[in-house]
Amino acid sequence: MKKLLITSALAGSLLVSASAFAEVKVKGYVETTIGGGDTPATSAVTGDGTTIGYETGVTFSGSKDLDNGMTMTTQATLEDSDFINQAIALKMGGNTLFIGNDYHGLDDKQTVPVVANTIEDGNKSLKVAYNNNAGTIHSKSGIGLMNKSDYGTAAIYYVPKVTGDGSTRDSAPAAVEKVGSGTAIGFQGSLGVEGLSVNASVTDKTTLSLDEKSITMKNIGVKYTLGMISVGVQSSKISDADFSETYELGNESEYTSIGATVALTDSISVGVQYANAEEAAGFAASDETTLSATVGYNLGGQVVTLQYTEVEDQKGVTGVDGDALELRIKSAF
Figure 1 (spheres, rainbow, N blue to C red):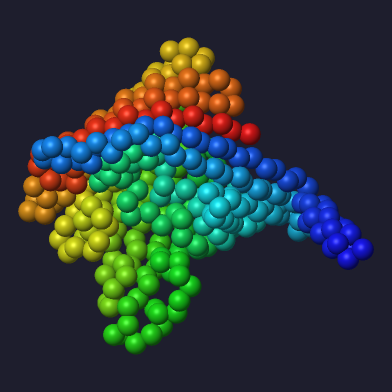
Figure 2 (figure 1 turned 45 degrees about the vertical axis):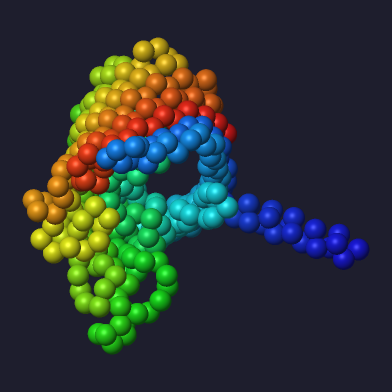
């Protein structure tokens, strides 16, 4: 009898929660990767062998029109057993006020077109330095304001604690490490031009340290799509930081990428992406260069891709090279 009461209470609470929203959606994916790569080295490159990996995610979202004319939306993603992307937003017209993380994508936009993953996400064991958003705060919890128009979306985002550990060390004496804060401001949109996609953002955040040390990322990218062909370029510059995003006064890490994709048929696409990562003179011996080529087959709800990636002078070390090959199967529901 007790179990029946508990079950009834749980079912009732779920019904009440669902009825609180005019629309509730659930979507998800299962991604399987099969492949291998090298541990980049100057000689006697070590192969890491073939591995099979998985990534899963389920996103819950809801929306409801409020009595004051606003629309409230919520979202949360369960990814690989951890909840991420939690956010609540209030919308009125073209304006949105939100609290959460990974909601805005303000300084996390990728304009270079790809068939599957970008180089930084699809390089297997190569561990390349290239990262189109190395200084981002998009996954940190904060508060932001967005305005959407026919030309695009402008937004500002503030994160009180960059480390996300919930501590109060920023209010402690000067001899105690700060956890840092961050601010991002930017724009994403077409500027009213069909086929055009532009993004530009500036992010400033205080690093984990005993004093106020900050790094600044400036990100700009352009993509244009005409029929079956898309081409794009993106550049990110981070002041006073090295490839590992560690504060280093006077250093400047710069990440540049160009790419293109072609839809050969309704189901088959090919793409190529080239990336360059460099540090200021005197900080790294060489520029890291990475090339990735991908072919993809879309089955409708399932995408199969084969991606080859090679890197030269990994993380700016001359002669440290390697390559990787990865088969990726992604099923969405």
